[in-house]
Length: 356
Image 1 (cartoon, rainbow, N blue to C red):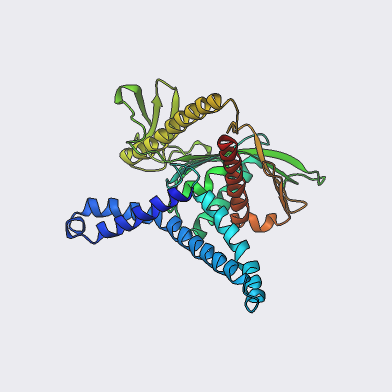
Image 2: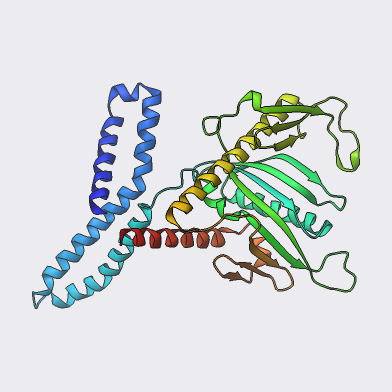
């Protein structure tokens, strides 16, 4: 591990030297490439340097223990430094875990009503607002690509693009079935009803990630319509794209421009096809390892929102919080951090098992 860290530090220093070269500074593309590689290594190298400082401090303190005049002070220093050294080593092990290549990507967020009818559609709208507030806290940009309203003012479906710094790394564990338990506004006898919605978080695929052949597409145009079927415009600006080999269908009618609707629909289509390919690769890898580390199946219930008890439970990690009112305001970070920590712990165990 430490040989690898030293190689990373050497590479970091070399990249820093390259950034000072006139030929690199005068080449915009080269400068971007070198500075990005330098930036990607920075956090790990700084942690490694801190580790080396702590390790040297521990060695110095151990050497002083033999001196009767310094023994007490050295023992106190060891008691302070050794836990820090252990924590720094644990952090470095996590930093060296294989990175998810999609972590830096923007995401396509898709939320749909499941069982529960109108109540489910109302919860779709609330969960979408929750994610909007979470995005605002991270200063991410969120753009609605498509939405379908229900008769009671909820959303049957909403698809949005979220752009910003490492969006997928924070949002990827939100995919799955979200269950809500509460008394609907239309319930006269105060009975708690259970409804469900599905959330899909797809890393946005660039054209280089997924090659979509024009011959594989069927593109239909139609007039946009709003809730209740009233005409929004009389031009054929709405777009429906069908990817014939996979029978994947994407529609977009939010823009008045057919070109803009087509662009948005293609972004969603590429991301859906990219996810299909990722799942295929995941299945192959899981089969090779002869273990299923997680199906990623969206039919799995991942979370329950219990409004009468102000309680949220994430079933994957057994986390229960009695602060649902705050969470619905977008304060999701404690849940996200717990899910990331659990994922890292699983990877560390798998890494240790392979090493053994």
